[in-house]
Image (cartoon, rainbow, N blue to C red; front, side, top):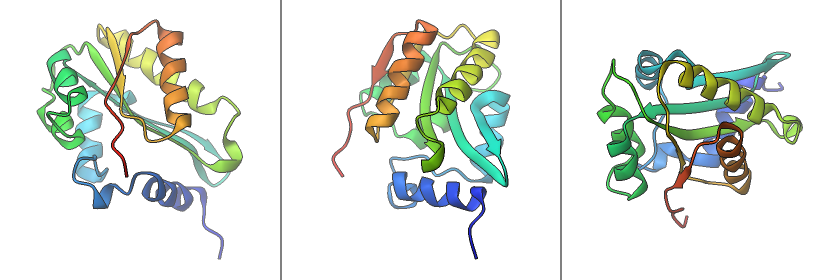
Length: 162
């Protein structure tokens, strides 16, 4: 039986990030999704075609102090999220992940979904920086595009060798 888009996206997330096997990464579950929603509704964004999502974008608004600690490898993704205070104005935005099913790549969908989400967050928060931890060339390209589109300086956490 063929997998639907949702099942394929879950498998893609596991293939790309293997978060279950890496304590430094954020393992997105119901608890994490609820916290993200409390931080801002646009933290989790998607584009749906046919039987489910073909693009998922995860953004985490946070403080400049936590951004600097994350980029310097002093805290993990999980700590970044758990330490991000609720109900305050955020000045930094972490492009945590962008997943696109293979047949939907190179169509501009991740850029479109990401830009809309960034602008929704910026409407409520004085975002001054974008930061990332790239796992792929495509992710790095998306971060660069988002940085340029939104005129935000881009900070990068060093890529860990796998």
